[in-house]
Image (cartoon, rainbow, N blue to C red; front, side, top):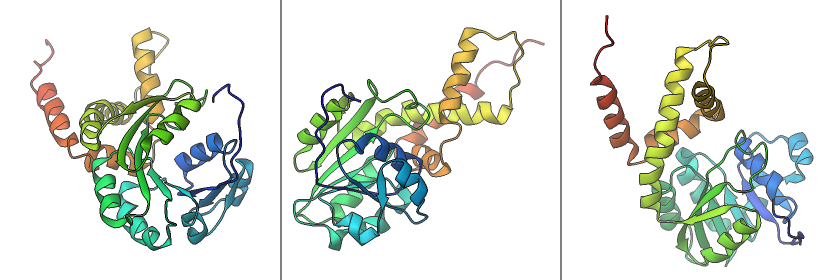
Length: 248
């Protein structure tokens, strides 16, 4: 969080989706905005602990700022439900791990009278346990003033990267796609190292631990919904299968 004095707005943020990542958002926004959260399986006790308020979909959708923290697979249905409820000049953001598909959906379905900024915070509940200062966030301008979103993210201490949905997904296919693929393989190997470990091995397993408990829908988005992930994963599998067999 920023060391600058916090000035709390009286304009609420509507948070649609209050899973692990939605809760992380609420934790870091509560000092700046009232957070009104909707979820299909609401956890009022958890919301209260994070300073958020559980509300109906309609109430969250009517806020001047609406954040969509939902799986990519649910984006079209959520956007269709959201569209007629949005107020003029509302700002809509998503926080998904891929950007081409959500941006296409939001452009197609959300009304012209709202602003749209696509974002991808490059962090998660595990990596953010010690705070978010210094973490990166990708911002993709879609419609309206993305600069104010970038300025607020910098206020939170985030390193802002402005990019396009296409370039984001190309980069993420390599960075996140390979990370989750390798993490999945090492998790399935069920390794049980002894005391004879190396620093490099420990760092590798630490990276695996950061993503091994990600929700299945996050992994599906990274490995399946990213239009560029397939090429990267095929190249990885081709290269690994071409390695020489170990000496007998």
